[in-house]
Length: 52
Image (cartoon, rainbow, N blue to C red):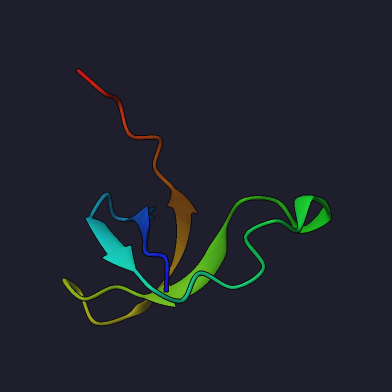
């Protein structure tokens, strides 16, 4: 199962295995997921990882 690195609305960065409908462009990039830092449902968007 592929993991996705996301950033919640409060700025916390974490990875999740379940980022539903990642390819659904008509819905936009944000999804509601439970943030492990604040333990609340937050809007989260995928983070682009930079390679150095």
